[in-house]
Image 1 (tube, rainbow, N blue to C red):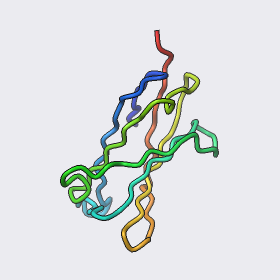
Image 2 (cartoon, rainbow, N blue to C red):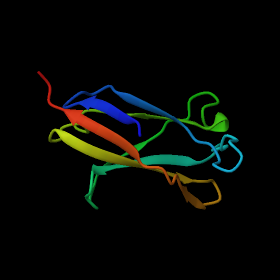
Image 3 (cartoon, rainbow, N blue to C red):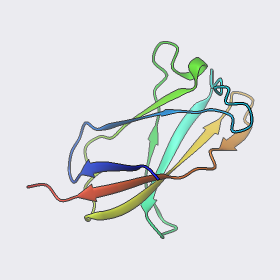
Image 4 (spheres, helix red, strand yellow):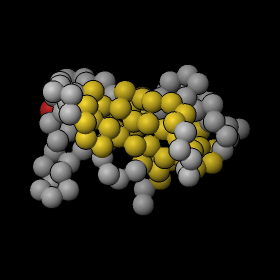
Length: 109
């Protein structure tokens, strides 16, 4: 299990995810889609915030989603968190990535 380490109150971290099909390994073409990551405390059901990936260049057509944290997002208590990626395609169908991203936020010095 990969854990992405973040620091409380940082305003510029980014997480890059390459979305692929589990059965074929092919990248998911997300052209025209909206790709979101919901962020919550581990074990909680309350969403703390949502990040929307920007489609820069050919990111989405090659299955790449980059989520950028901004001011206030990481104003969180030190501990474990989870992220869930959801894709809403141009035709309004929704697909959720099964694997949850794991994060640890530590206090700043």
